Amino acid sequence: MNFFVILLFLLPAIVMYVAYQAHLFKEGKAFYFNRIVWGTEIGRSRYVEVDAILMKRISFYRKLSDNGKAKFVHRLSKLLLIKKFVAKNKMLLTEEIKITVCASIVQLTFGLKSYELDNIKGFKIYPTIFYSSFLKANLRGSTPPEGLISLSWKHLEHGFLIDNDKYNLGLHEVAHALKLSLKYAYSYDTKYAAYVKEWEKFGHVEFLKMKRGNESFLRKYAGVNEHEFFAVCIEHFFEVPEQFKHNLPKIYYHLCILINLDPLNDRRDYLLVK
Ligand SMILES: [Zn+2]
Image 1 (cartoon, rainbow, N blue to C red):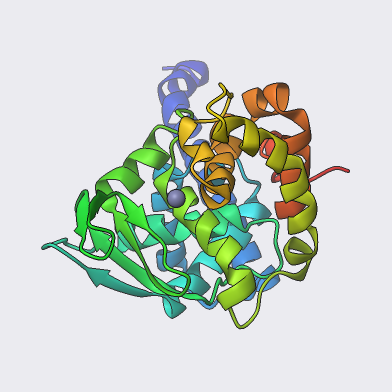
Image 2: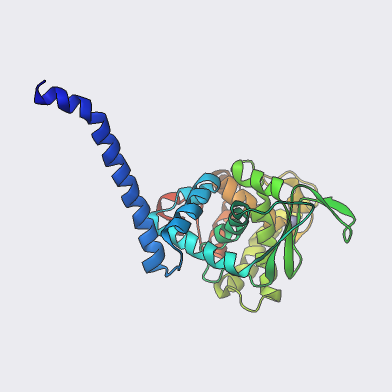
């Protein structure tokens, strides 16, 4: 057998070996950024576990650079340490559920300096829709000014799984928490705080239009009150940014400034280019 025939037999194995090494290097690069640049004290196996869950579940995370992924995992790891989780109605809480829930906070506040939302102490997780005796209604989620956010896992999971249907329960509830942080948190993002009134000025016209019952690009629920208007805007902003920008360019632009990121710039970690 001459050399070239042997090489032909070995070629698939060589290609697989090189691809495997390249994969290890890539994984190692993000881990390096996470450890050295962001100072996260988690081991490689934990990093690989968190990364795999985020890659599977969060499309925002999938498009980040290695350094962007490292920043995401850094913030997520910190939130997992400080947020409390309570299982309700026989819910079986897993690490994957906790990571997906906290990813809602990291995604929404990715462009902000302050991201802890310390008015929110943690989450009550229900398997599906739950009854609120306080509001006397069946709910998918609710966010009090401070304390624990209540969430239906079924609907939260679906929100991230279908990422372009204008529904994302996790981002919706965290948007309420972000707004409430200005009044109820010990510390909040000062740039967000400084711009929120300006953003509301631009959003108000569309909100009044919806309140009067007029058609809008946004889901009808945005017309309920100004809090829901903001939360629904956030869902559309991340789920259908192109349509949002096309239909309501001013509101889209000022929302980009408000939370300091542009979902359309997915090649550069959603960096806002002013
Ligand atoms: Zn709401």
